[in-house]
Figure: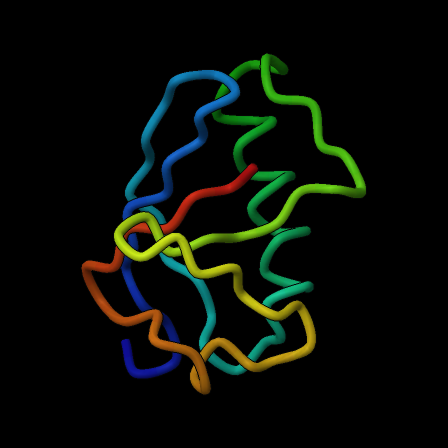
Amino acid sequence: MKNKVLVELVVPEIEEKYDIYIPVSKKVGSVISILQKSVFELSDGDFIATQKNLLYNAVTGEKYDINVLVKDTNIRNGSRIVLM
């Protein structure tokens, strides 16, 4: 899948991790919305999305700019990202 990358998504709020595909041609802000909906469903409603949710690199702590395309970040297959 050239248009998606497989990442490990860490969600500290509910103490869960998910392996999930994200599209590389979308802006990080759009991906956050997709992830919020996915995690809500996967957690049976335990995760409640807020306007303040952002994505971070789990290794470096770098916050991803919501206006940048995923393909223009350092998010690649196998990356660990944090949604909080």
